[in-house]
Every structure is written in C-alpha cells, then in structure tokens.
Image (tube, rainbow, N blue to C red):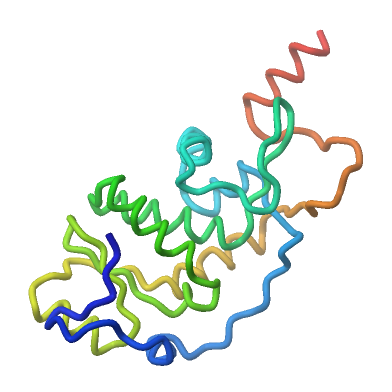
Length: 193
C-alpha cells in the first residue's frame, strides 16, 4: 500500500509540494508512439516472461495497443515502461508482489508529470510516497525507510535507453514487420514451412 503520510503522521502532503524533489522540466510524450514487448523488456530490465505475465494479470498492461488475439503486437507507452522499471526495482529489493500491485494501482491514478516528481520509499513491507525532501528525511529518521526509488531518475534512465531503441506508431496498420522475439520467429518459421 502506498502511503503519502510522513513518518511523524503529519498527514497527506499537498500536491503543490511535489516540485521540491525534481525541478527539471520533463518532455511531452507522444501518446500514439509505442514500444513492442522486446523493446519494453530491454528498457525495463525484465524478461519477456515477466512482461507477458504482468500484462495478463493486469499489473502493467500496454496502454498504446493491447494484444487483441494471436499475432497482434502489444505496444507499451513510455509511462508503461517507466512503471515496469519501477516494479522491477521494487521486486529486486524484496517488496512483495501484493504490495507492488497496490503501489501500481496508486501510481495509475497519477499523471506522468506527477510520477516523475515522487520518490518511493520502502521498508520491505510497505511502500511510501514522498513528494518532498523533508518527507524522505522524516521517513528515514523515523526508521521506516530502507531504500528509495526516485522516479524522476528512473524516468531519465528509461528515456536514455529508449532513445536508442525502435518505436512504432499505434496507427500504423501496414504489413506486419519482422518479429523480434524468439517465440514469434518460431511461429513464423512453423507457418512458412
């Protein structure tokens, strides 16, 4: 569960305070451009099996173009890949999948700009949302925070990685491009032969 209470129980932090952690202007995102599964995996540092499982179970679904049947390609938005990378980091630090599902549900409610301006802190059991440097300090001094994920920094990492990887337009309905993953290559070889 994500909580945006400070460690001293002072209550929710107003959203106007979010600019305190990250004051860099972030670029506008093209909502019609997406990234195929293998590209999303590479940018987020996860396996295709994880990506597929998380999409099928609703943890992180592709928002540009979902799979609509056999042979269709999912397209993930930049925001989807950002959330995938945050999920991966939380898993790597030992946060339970149940807590991650709760955190992702909370993150879905926010716009991309808000995501880039929060820090997720965790004690391994709960996930806390910090929107100012003071909240981070309060949480750590209260003994609750063990590690933190500055989402704005993850944003920049994903942005740098994706700049070198192929994109696809959601409205591009031309002939299907050559598949990039091993499973698709096997299917293609089987149907051709």
